[in-house]
Image (cartoon, rainbow, N blue to C red):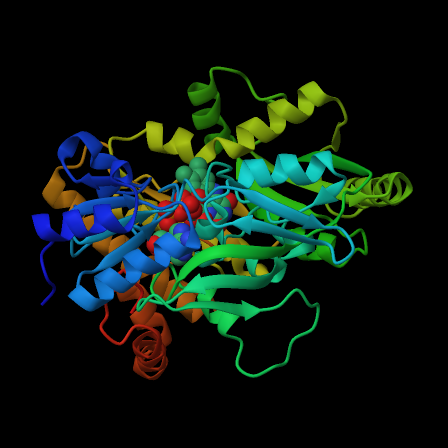
Length: 463
Ligand SMILES: Cc1cc2nc3c(=O)[nH]c(=O)nc-3n(C[C@H](O)[C@H](O)[C@H](O)COP(=O)(O)OP(=O)(O)OC[C@H]3O[C@@H](n4cnc5c(N)ncnc54)[C@H](O)[C@@H]3O)c2cc1C
């Protein structure tokens, strides 16, 4: 159905861009055949490392004219196989397009190339007194990857997700056309929002080459509270009350002692508190006075009304590092505890989080599997890991499928969705279909066909 890449195509690509940036795939560069989760493998035929929008346009047009599939790759930190080239063809590596181009202070807009890394954007803006607020856990991801997966992260409770911080995008369509969706403006009701279709489209509609991001003044202060609870259930039940308390937290995370134990083994250091089975981690940011007032009010409520065992103020750099490095390591720590795992990234109404977590305990019993979890209590986004441990490959395949079906079925029943932030890619396609139904999936397919009539851009993903 697609044309195979031949020597003639490689020579043509080498003429279109610098030949030192065109690589024929072999297993010495096997990272291009997978993403961070590593369970889905698809080998590209050729990898092209682009340096400019013009180069992206030329390569896309060549692929379009020759019916060659093209998959865009950022840093490959995705968790659903989204950047894996299922049909071979070209992988477009964006990591050399990593410049931070301009900070427009008057309009509070940061202009960046799509391959710029999240950590570089954070350092650049902080040094100039600004904040780009989305804060997904993996800082080596590219902004293009963050935009096309609509990445979430810890600060979503107060600041929203990546979508809320994108003013405009420069994109290249599959036939090589270069366009700008959105402008450097605050309000925009000018027709259908093509920009918002690209956000979260996982490289299936267009190639993002540049982004204009909203930034705000850097908050004067940030302070976290570590709140031990007698049980996870008790902890999570307080979250809606905290959200309604008028204390405006930036982040509300939850985790159990079990998750901390994985992290302690992985990092080789003890968590600052050893006494409780469950914790909520709260952060506040803003002016000094605002943070002090909100943290004080929250602490009083937590102790006196919200059934906390204690409130530990994370007020030294050392303690902050200990607490947040533990929180940030959960995914990798759980991954290191088992030969293979898969992930469920459901989002449910905040009021359902506690029951949903209890349901995962039932599934652990039912299938004899380990399902460690943690999550963003403030926005109902849960990360549940299904661990293979010592199951045979056959048992694993069967049980994984059953557990996933149960997890997504329950999420649908309680008014949730398949993914809160990691996307659909290939791994969650089946569940998206079950969750949304044929009419919505067909609408999505028609959108895909309007952008990419030959189905060349990251084929086999989302719909
Ligand atoms: C330890 C760890 C923690 C994580 N924590 C979070 C978290 O808190 N929140 C969260 O949301 N995610 C998280 N992730 C998942 C991952 O980091 C995000 O999905 C991230 O946005 C992927 O960016 P990337 O550059 O690695 O993209 P890739 O994995 O390379 O690609 C992801 C998708 O984006 C597409 N794409 C990439 N660049 C472009 C572009 N320029 N134009 C068009 N399409 C493009 C690809 O085709 C693919 O479909 C985590 C991952 C790890 C390993």
